[in-house]
Length: 259
Image 1 (spheres, rainbow, N blue to C red):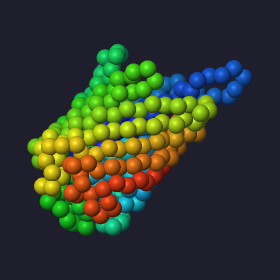
Image 2 (image 1 turned 90 degrees about the vertical axis):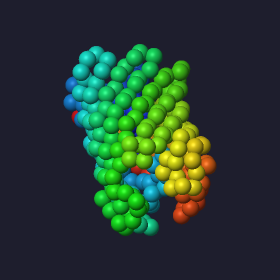
Image 3 (image 1 turned 120 degrees about the vertical axis):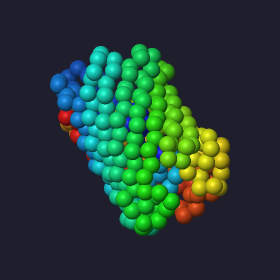
């Protein structure tokens, strides 16, 4: 049920890792990509707000993630990931996730299919509150380049609550220097059924998410990515995002090492 997982792993690292092979210019020192990467990626980050698919959970969160990609054929890879987040205000909230998925390069598009398990260590709402302490889902995502823009589609079926979530998005990369880019993105979510609206809404549009990443390649392995983002609650989340308000802007930063 969290946007950080399949969709983020399928889409956002493209923006972050796009600087691993920046355009070369004669006479300039550029950061070269790793010659023989192991397929490992480790990240740590801080978010002023923790939103997942339009759903507000907590403020001031610190997270870590580890991902591994193993090519199986020229076009197919096996991907594993784990994720942990801890937030402190206004509730003590923490969560650990793990997933496995397959990525297929179809040429005109890249497809990702997989499974994610979520465990809420002190309840769905934190502070040992909430109707559940676990969830799991299957998901399918695609990334299709259309000129300089990536068109993203994603679908998730939450097996715990038997509800559906669809998401469409766009992102692009605007190079600034050989080591710095600007990556704007936007998503629109749609619920089919009561997808964590807690009885306040059923089928309908979930939220609009806007984000601008500023990835900075520090070396052939390291990337620092500050960002600003905004969440605009629609019918599916207006009734539950009441603590911070249905519309909000925030920022954060992430540090990633690729091996």
